[in-house]
Length: 97
Image (cartoon, rainbow, N blue to C red):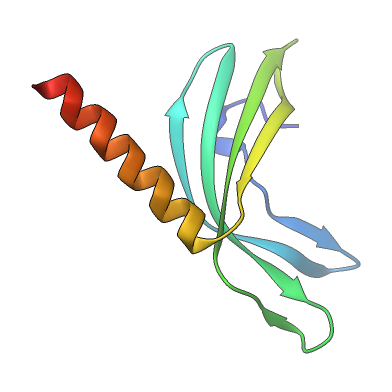
């Protein structure tokens, strides 16, 4: 378990094989509750190639000096990600008026 937000990762390995490869990370909030967005790829075990890039947003709670995962949201497709971006841009644009 990670003690700092910077140490948090979604890299996942089994038997020396990296099954989930973290490509990038954006810390959205820090503190007792941290929110982190990750860009990652899963390994396709059939062809031993990494699949398409995916995004997940994870929430962690810090207890006894360690961060524990509490919830996650996976963006399931590029189309869904684009819709999220467009909605946020619209909402932010409305606030600036």
